[in-house]
Length: 230
Image (cartoon, rainbow, N blue to C red; front, side):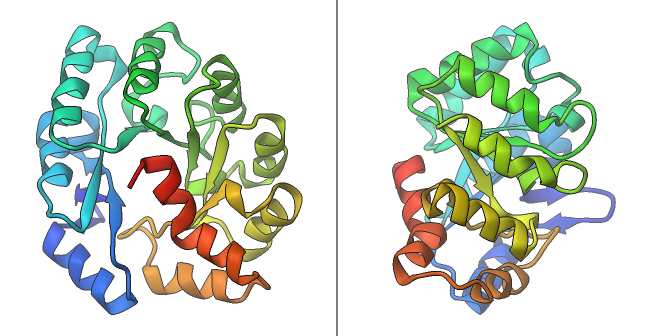
């Protein structure tokens, strides 16, 4: 996450420093703060111009209407690799009709869509399941993995649709392990949620799991390469 919030701040240079310290070659970032909620152009520009080692997810508010679609087109032309939506901060239900044009555009661009999950009532995991059923050609990623209020729904949610994936950045080891064992490592993506969490914490969480080399490679980078066409 790049930008500034009341208690969080991260700029590209600092993210690169943290990546180097953790041995991370490539990051996928999305805006936070005002760049996520109101000033989408500035937020998107921040993540899309952060350099070759940081790839960006475009974010728009569906309440923007046609202007949101114009912004997504601009971001695609600047190299965005997917879309990020935050129903809680942006003020919408994932199942509302205003969201459908954005998801149709994501399908057109071949983009995965990460949606924040884990807070009642807007960021509802089950609402993401519903739109995943409506848009089977789109890969949906449950941002924050249902943290903090809906983590217990993640395994059943992922098992109910074939195009829903886990962002493991905020979920503890047992929750990640359950999804790997029940649904396969192909449904889990490594994430750090920097600066809300830390690379070293997320790496240690995964290191404690009894993952095979193939599972580890898939979670750390293989699944992201496949979904984001890296």
